[in-house]
Length: 208
Image 1 (cartoon, rainbow, N blue to C red):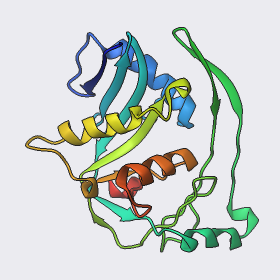
Image 2: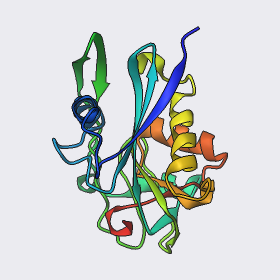
Image 3: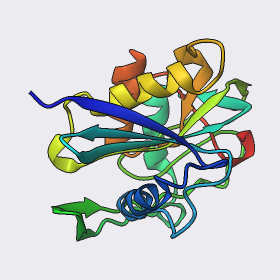
Image 4: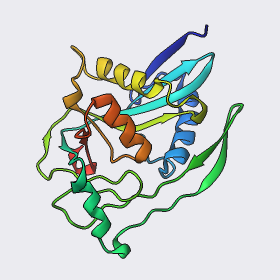
């Protein structure tokens, strides 16, 4: 049986022993999740890596936030289909990436916010609508990534558990103190399952 472990890194100050490994992983995560090069990390981020059998199988990037918005579940978010077509964009592309000896396909989802500032809305397979009123939150999950061959095996949930336990000094954060970035369809499923509700919290740049 392989022993898995979760490693945590602060972006500043940084342990020079691991900086190059983390940078390589982050490059893959940025490509996989559709971030521009160098846009994923900033100095306040904490990086969590799921390592199994000497290989990195998952990555979570967390950042401090001040507020978040509750997702409006069910039919409220489905009404987005009434928006003009020129207000939405969903582009998908498949590419092959290699990291170490791992090769896999990736799907890029480009997501844009609707100009209506009264609600947080994300277009695409994981489109959601959120409450306008913000609620206090402390930890934002900026990115969660798992090697495709290891998905749906609880790795993402273990990474979230680790972040909640160690992100803030003094105790484990409650689920209501944590939020996700506007998710893809897979991310929405993860957030709903982990939080045990479809009314989980999401945050945007202005909430950081």
